Amino acid sequence: MANIDEYLSPKQVSEIFNLSISFLSKLRNEKQGEDAFLPYFKHGKKVLYRLSDLNAWFEKNIKKGASNVCKQ
Image (cartoon, rainbow, N blue to C red; front, side, top):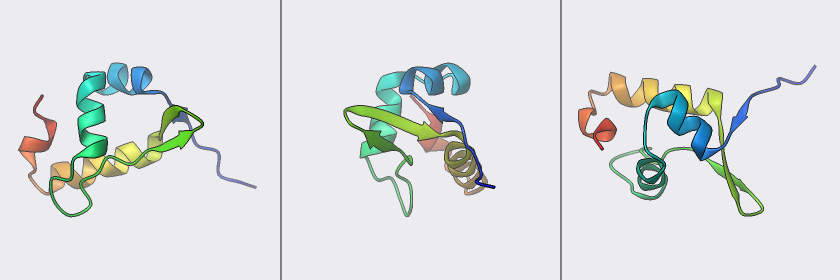
């Protein structure tokens, strides 16, 4: 059986993680270190995030002590 994951819009991610949509865009597009891009993909013109990717990305960056990553 396939592993079904939840896909989220930028608005949903901003509400869950309490981050502005513009900050999410910045994290998507600015490299701040090795593997620092916020993982996302596009479906047509829509930007989508996979919840498991976001959780892994935040966990990895928090563990690195990258406090500047989460500043808005």
